[in-house]
Image (tube, rainbow, N blue to C red; front, side):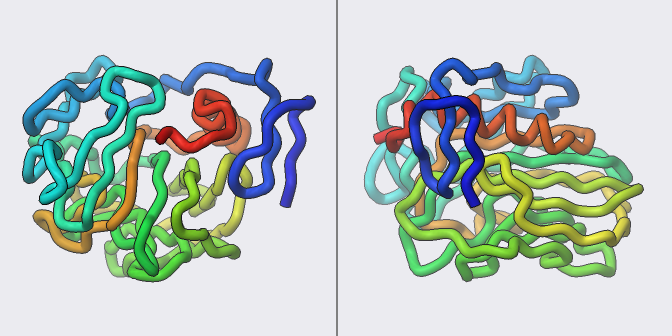
Length: 242
């Protein structure tokens, strides 16, 4: 499916973005915003939301054993993970019984992908080892309540995002375009500690690359998901961060 916003560059997923359509990142309701361009050294992945919700890598991404951060300090930075490392919040910062949204700029380099953003024994946004985005609250409803209606391709950058509403249910987006819904409104009963590219204490790791990951404590609108996608995909000028 192609969506045209003026004339400009073409990026993964068949969406063409205009250079002039580079709106800013949505900030209302941000719980954390992890952008690898802000990484300096060691195990800390700084949060730029203003909430000081920094994440900690299980192992410092300073070499091939646990991944490497490339282009540090630039807006085309990314972390390349060999599939044995992730980053985790300091505590259960993700509140219970709330509407929420997630977004991540990533690519997978294996035959499929696992966790993107999720919390131990709670919600997750992942691929379950396949090439299909899925999400669930794991509150009696499992981890794959909603699934995308299209598959992703390896070695391709995407802005993948989703929203959950306790009123209207789930929507998954790929590069700002809706690709799967479910009307289930089963909510999360417990606060949780989110992880990036990992789950349940550095398990279910994804082999691939990640540039940005964030969570909102509200359900973003379709227009807001598209605005975020436009911001990131225009930021890379239609090319890989590498």
